[in-house]
Length: 204
Image (cartoon, rainbow, N blue to C red):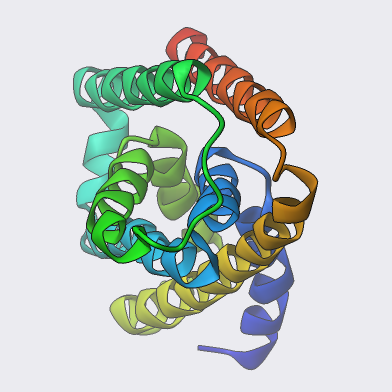
């Protein structure tokens, strides 16, 4: 693909990657509780989900999915309910311990949580069906261009995961006290609940 299009794509894409959202908030909280490495590994679940979505977008199936109101509604419903479930668990949880002792055994669950949260986000489908194609030249090899754009998106997403995880590490000293940690948990739970409710009520 043309270099100038890629140079335009990178900053616009990174702005999307860095937008505060449920997955980025989850990476930040995972780093606060389990450390940078566990949070980054957990983020690979998100990368896996997005890789599947990009593959669908490249093959044209994502467009069919997005234009199907029933399928899109079902994805939105599952995603919203999952967000609300995470918010409920986080709100009721005790102050999350800042510990690396159980990080290894928790990583598989953290990966699954990141994957489910990303896969249940219909806005991601919209990004891959409406945003990426704007930088594709239909006169060229569409699949090759989707591969380059998709790979760039995933690399930038991994960078965003790293940045939010590092910020989560910074918060460890702030929220090492149980009361502060509990407040942070409730703040995150509120954000996730609002996101879930907004997802349920949104028309798109």
